[in-house]
Length: 84
Image (cartoon, rainbow, N blue to C red; front, side, top):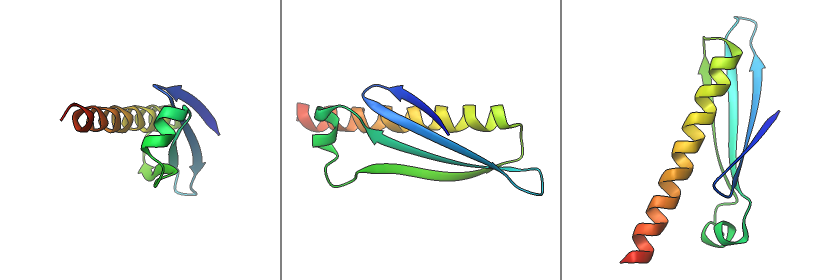
């Protein structure tokens, strides 16, 4: 399992290789900072599973990028609500 931190969140990525040669990537995003936890109190983590037919490195890279985009959206949505 790989762990990365991004903008107050932890991204955990687990990769499993299937018999077919494809990869299943399970990614979970969890708030690390107290401020972000307070905004996500009803959702302790967000996650997704994806099937990839590329290399393991590309599968992890795609999961990491999509997780970072999800975090950016969470923060942008929270900022939009606060500024209203």
